[in-house]
Length: 378
Ligand code: UT7
Image (cartoon, rainbow, N blue to C red):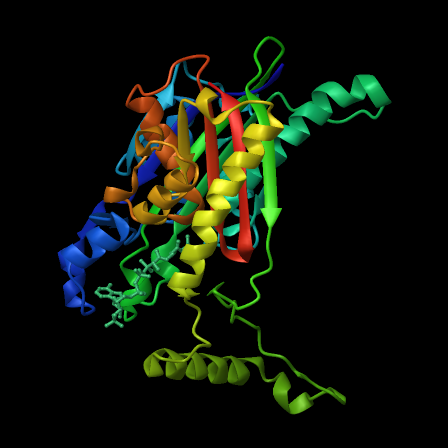
């Protein structure tokens, strides 16, 4: 018995930006980007929200028509349509939610009429899908198995939707060539079902290494005007409108300066992250395979975070595995953070690379520094 993937979907915004298009913004070129990253183009949201992308990917995973966002391109892998009311849990890993309250998960649940679901977001950066699917599987196992063993009654979770959606373009410094050529926008989703007669997810492995050198960061600068000093309330600062104007003026200035490290954009020490990533991916694959009592030869496909094709090749070499055993979907998406793994998994399934009974490892790394892997049977 276990949590089985019964549907997958992905979506991308309509605007596609080729590598050479970025020459209008920074000193770069197609050859550099392709050889250093494997990226050829990426999709960028102009007016597609994080939630709209998530809606389109989730509708594809449920095998339903996304009439509400039919203008957003999507790919679906789903044997038969899944009733939205049968979803008990929505977990939404993202670092780019449209709002803080409601959560992205709650907004999506309402919009898609997932009437019976509980819903919450998590932030594990690019490892979000791995953490999300692991948490969902734990909740499903606890509610379906543990009640019988320890008597603790939990709400039954039979079906769960894990949906990642990112608008990294909102957090990208489009003047910084070291990062802006890497990122793209998109969403990926999967539906899990608890089944008594199939193994589904066999092993999960999650990890968090300290980012001692702040190799990958993005600040959250927003603070409402504060009428307080160390001595208490400052009545003169209670003119909230005036204070808000000051805050706006400050951020206009910071944006205009452009080079300030306080700006709300992703900052990255590329080489430090590269070193961590290659080792972390290989080590997570080894851990999860060992935990499952299997060998690397038993794995049909590894679906890695799509951050850089060179990182994936590095991990393959470290594991002494053929690169053919890795799903490569980065060429026309770029790095879409948490969405990368479910988007690539949808590609692999839609391309017919996997059959029932095949064993697959999903693996990712990201800011935090998070990393992890999930081993499952299709
Ligand atoms: O999911 C988030 C996790 N992030 C990642 O996984 C990213 C991990 N890191 C990487 O993928 C790579 O480090 C990068 C792709 C970001 C950079 O590749 P690199 O091979 O480490 O290049 P580099 O930073 O060492 O830069 C090499 C040269 C430099 O020029 P000089 O100093 O040798 O003259 C850079 O200024 O390439 C230059 N450069 C560029 N040139 C053209 C950096 N960015 C660009 C660019 N176009 N976009």
